[in-house]
Length: 217
Ligand SMILES: [Zn+2]
Image 1 (tube, helix red, strand yellow):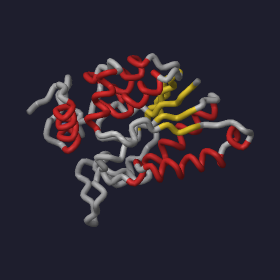
Image 2: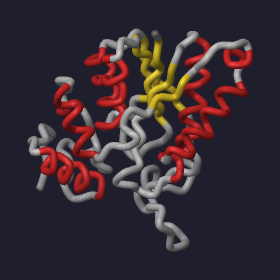
Image 3: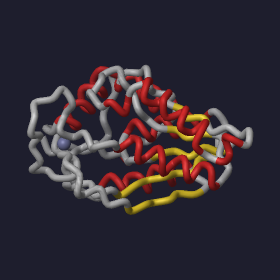
Image 4: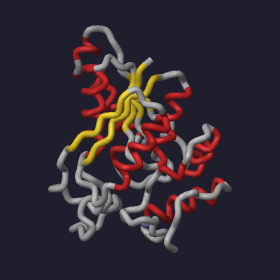
């Protein structure tokens, strides 16, 4: 079995890919440099690929730096009040899954694994089960492999889990979380103050585990 894993450098995609590997799949990593504020997460993505023993790891440069998002432009402020946070990148997971699908079809992979979860719901529409179901229909109707009787399944092993549960599973799988990065800043140590650091620290505390990443504060 072959699986294309979207690897971002964070905890979720690491645990999702490791979970898929534990089910017996060979992992083909895909990481995208889309113009994130810093490169640190891509450095971590490479380390994660090595840790997982990926068969191949593709890094794509897809310039999304023209899109409004606080993940791309740290000075970005949303124009309208919305329940969806400013870190939302327009259509990001549609773009990522499309790239993963092209890769999966080209190597005759059986699945794509993505670390989305919707329990501590960030408000991102492209992390919800209904989006994944809809994209599965795209896969089933839009590529040669599917119409010729083959199957590419989108796997979302974390979709109904809380962040603390994801960390516990990763811990059981023996993952080294010191090679992950969640902070919105790309400094030597994580800031401990941004939303992403706060969510991560709270989840480790909730899981009763110590975060091996170093923090400034
Ligand atoms: Zn931070």
